[in-house]
Image 1 (cartoon, rainbow over the protein chains, first blue to last red):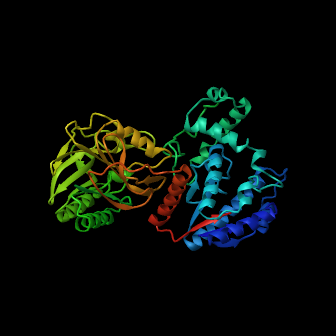
Image 2 (cartoon, rainbow over the protein chains, first blue to last red):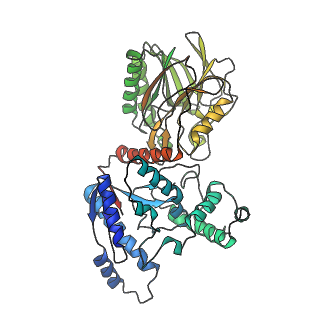
Image 3 (cartoon, one colour):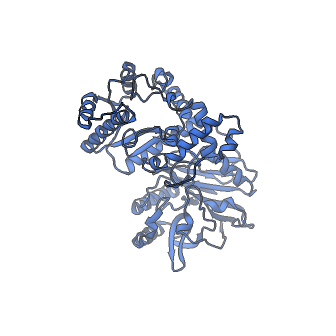
Length: 226
Length: 271
């Protein structure tokens, strides 16, 4: 296994420190490939004449995806993609960016369960620095960005996703359980809108009765909205 | 009576290699463990699920020759093997019971799951006959996976039910299996597949249950095992399991089998 850290100007110093420590503790090879030069070159070539947007953010994720696939071609190794079920559900992931790869280990694992598994793993032997678990999740694609700029807190997001995806409840029934209507509608709209992304995602281990894939087959082209 | 369950990690489509695994296990069960019967999981010979490989007619040529090979060494022990059976009436999800090199009976799965991850109606025709086989004076009924979720495939005259399965893991699945099987009020021998196959992870955890629904013997979770036990065993204490431990094992086995069964020399991950 090779872990590849691909920092940009938006990567926090502690990201490198913690990821290196984790790779050391697990005894895996660790490689650093900065993406700033490639990113600046791409921006120059594209010459966007507009305010920076998600296009510039995702360009960084896609450069990282391209690097991983180049390394995969050179070594024959399989790229594992890192998305989890919460991200896959609402499309909080970059197509051809962090969704790149042949197998997605956490595809059917909601974010709150990822935390639970991380703590479980540390009980077996210390393998994940506590700060990796404790710090606010961030894509690090823009200055001081955190996941919760875009998404509701994961406790709430995962609860809504569980009711909508795993229990097949409709919007009204979810709101009736005490969730904010605006948040529920936003989350479910994101789920429905992102079928096209999920359909292009790598396969991953199924651990629920409603994994994305054979368990849950929705049309991509659909006029059904909430 | 001593029973063996070949809770093994078969690879889909690797029929000759799977047959080798079956033969090694049956010889070990007979020669070293002195088992009277060895049970292999649902579609053990081909792996599960075969999906549209079932549309390749050459697959059945390979299945036939692998089955003949298994039969030719099946002496001194009864053997139950799951395999896809092609007939003029269609393809069945079947299990053959072999005794002294001969087919005693071929049982055809009656209840075909067609929900969730299962597409069995796309490929298989349902069987329509339950069966009872006697061994050392005990009458065994034989079921294949989904059959055991219903009452009608269960033979009333059977003393003990055998069910062969390719039952994938999901959270609380083991508890679901137990709850469903308890309703039959018969001793049950449950043989499950183990290993990762694309998205699916089969968790093994084969077991023997007495007629009151208590577990009397249980094979390991998420690992291969030639699981041998006496039929007259009494209940064992409940095993403690945690959801985190189960999910962690499912994920690691799923990734490991995806990487190794597809012959990748390693993995890369962006941090």
